[in-house]
Image: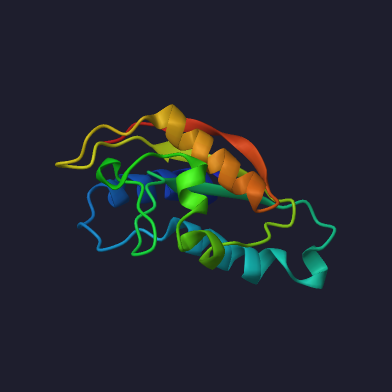
Length: 142
């Protein structure tokens, strides 16, 4: 009951409300993960602790330095590595297991995003940043 009240229900409510939110000018997912890694995974107390991160998102990175929207190009990790974002968002996940809850949605006016290729990108990004890909589960989207 505590898990339902303290985690499952708030997580479901957050996903539901985020789908109805206004359009943002950017979606800095990598920066958010980087901030978590710096704040919570890099201190001495967490050095030997098991670290797990759950990300609930459409996972579409969109910043000035790199965009995953289909109009911007392919979803390969190679294209990302050649962008200015690669060095900017490089971080050490300190062996954390990253689990993705993928909110599959179709951005208005954009071609369909290949969800499997998109998850392959994130798997490579997590591993390149010294993390473990814990898998992805698809959630209902808009």
